Length: 335
Ligand SMILES: O=C(O)c1ccc[n+]([C@@H]2O[C@H](COP(=O)([O-])O)[C@@H](O)[C@H]2O)c1
Ligand SMILES: Cc1cc2nc[nH]c2cc1C
Image (cartoon, rainbow, N blue to C red):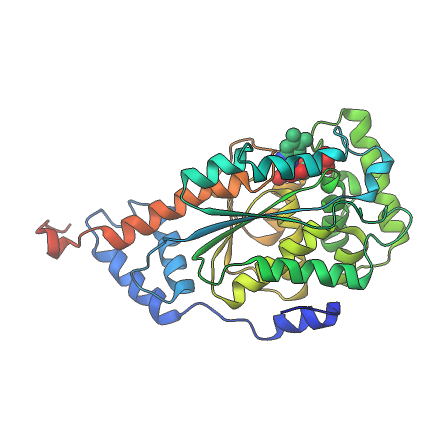
């Protein structure tokens, strides 16, 4: 599917599938019979039941995790908001393609396929302190690219990103969607010092002053976001239509997801927070979304890394749920 307008994309949120209640009920009943004290697998039990509901299978398999990394460049880097130069975006895309990045190693560890989608890297978005980051056509094209990147055969999706400057876009987007002050949403990103963080907050404030997007989530995405953020928004929505569970990565990924939540409450019910990153706005945003992260490892890399690690947690939960013997099968006495 290709979207020509933001309204075309928004229309896809009108009829989203829900989890299969019968599969969740049967999974819950199975969980109660497995050879462990009730609740002894903690959050893994809820995870397995959640996964079973979305997949529509009481005893699901998890065989085909997919990681997709979207890359974009940002005009707002002209404001001095990143510790790294913008050329790093295209250089890291080459690194992903040749297998040298952290995400290549992590995807391999968990048996996930990895796709890399570079979005017009030679045509950065506009500096949002001066103009909307994207035209409607650009934003719709990026949403479409995300939508199309999801493999319909995947049974778990990680969306990640690469884009020098994108923690500034994510902070502006989060502030527009959730309110509060720019200082609540900015952090060091790739390694700004205190003066850099203060400058970043002023840049976010300038963007919010210029674009009046309150209560218009897709306009906030268009004016303040970036192509890789819009692509993540599109991919997360597409996964929902396919009932593919999603693991959210760091601050930028979660800001992109929050657009869907604000446009249609419940639109992220198929998503779990893979981890909480070091970027201070991430924990705040997850709290606003009501999502408790699976991992908290002090990561601040992006590129899907924290969510990829969490694939292993979901694999563990599903393997126990679907592979364990019941008390009756194993001849183990109950409590
Ligand atoms: O995932 C996160 O929470 C995260 C936190 C800090 C930095 N990053 C990554 O660093 C880049 C953006 O940082 P910056 O300082 O250039 O805005 C981008 O490529 C992200 O993948 C990612
Ligand atoms: C080197 C580098 C690698 C990254 N991976 C994701 N974001 C990144 C930012 C930098 C600077």
